[in-house]
Length: 401
Image 1 (cartoon, one colour):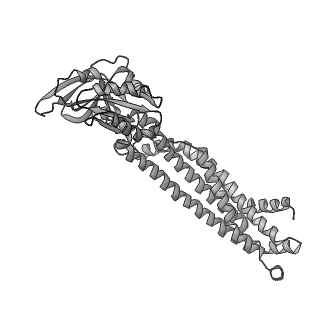
Image 2: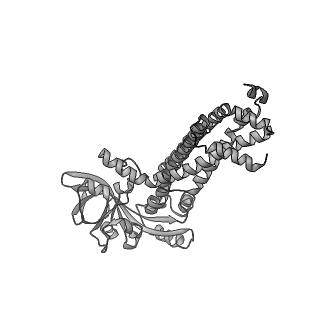
Image 3: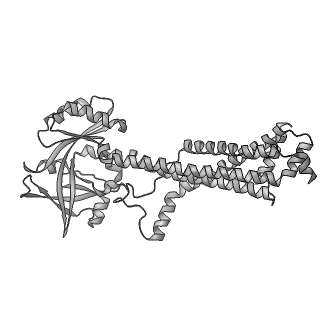
């Protein structure tokens, strides 16, 4: 039997528009495979979005390696000169940290003030509402969640209380809200940026720390750089990296993505088993046609090839439909989340619980190709038992009945 005839029979069985049992079962197999692939791709795209936003949005605003000291800042100046000469270092920015209490009416909130120079605001520029045109010693930038919680608007004056080391004396610091940082991430809950001179002017004895923020070309080399930088500094200088503060979150995102991918891959295996049962019933439904084909000269290898081709076609059609549907679901996921929030009357994601306040999507065609390839391979493999069953039908006994 020529391959063209084998393909013709397999294609007719797969895309049979009739109302018979075999036609219905073929459509059920294709729909099941398509839904499994679509669900897997949509969920993978959302989890990839969390991974991308973690790397590109959150880590772009956080120091990859942070060096702080409560004492003399001389070692930090020497460190800055050394690091700026390394091509793997994107930038080295000085800053000042101070623990403070934000007072707004009867509300008191603990915050960490970060004093920055004007040039160090560059990573935040696109997320500031409105932009900061004049960065002066009374300027203040707060995260959107903090400003909303305290009912603060741009232009309002805010008083901070900065404690001294003995905790019995407090220094007030009055600032004016110049902009709000709306990153849509958990950083909106903690960010409080001020001019470095505002903290530098505080009296000696206050609990302030000076430091430098190191941004790396490759964020995943932060642990190695932390160790190397620590070797250059005295023991009283503290060196941390982003994995110490957000490493657990990033690991949790990676683990969640892998587990969800594994669970949904099992769904594709279930759809493949559905192909097995469907093709077995097709063998039962078409046993007379199979026997007649073999009586007319068809070999057992021809029957086996036809069922393998039908399994492969079910996988191909299901993969194409699933990838198309999955792409549509992934693209519409943010809008669907907004509609769900409107229907529930409450935010679906909040930065005090989740790292992001929106549903991110990152569609990767490599995932689509891998998932589609696995689905097609499983469909072909699932046709093994039905193909062998069809090829072993007794021709004379089947035609006699």
